[in-house]
Image (cartoon, rainbow, N blue to C red; front, side, top):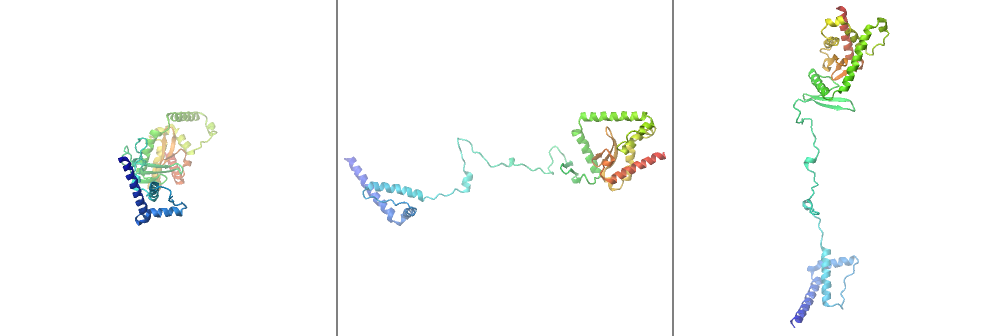
Length: 304
């Protein structure tokens, strides 16, 4: 008997609350939002839910509850998350750790400036720039930028000459090439000995040397009596005259020298450039100075 009474009370309570809710939702301004949503759905062409008089009050209450849930879902506004929420959000998939895609400062390429010397290099180091395409060389010597195509002071010329020596020791010609040069030099010496033994007329018919100045030096060096009287080689003697000629002139700062190099013979040095033939020197003033020095040396030999 109690169970039947309980069911009756529950049904009556459902009917009462259903009618109260229906009345409040349709007529009170507090719930005008639900009514506004219904009007919006009508404007969009959606038919308004009609109340069937045949339905029982329980069915009406269930339909009303379902309709209220739908209206509340449509009425909710979706707000975009803030930027800080997105940045602080951590995504985890398959229990993997979070992957940080923000680049660290250590991975960014670092620009090394000229003033920042490597740890293995001390102060006063020479920095050399080489533009292969334009064949341009610029060096920093004693915190001063120097264009190697321009004039060099004696100190700069000495520093770059030492650099040239160090480079020759580390990246110079290979042993095979050095032996080949030595072998060719031996052939030249043997050819000179043969020319000294042939008659004078046959020597006149020989093909003249491509470099007249080098032929002149080689011819004088072959004169044994004169070489015995002199402690210096002919190129060194001519170089002394050359240095006197270019003293206190713009050519002095360019490092113009004449020397006798082993396995290479007579060479002409202009700054850091080395020429085997005088006609390859681009500066006409330097060529004129060298020829003048040779002429003065020749005159001094005639006087002796």
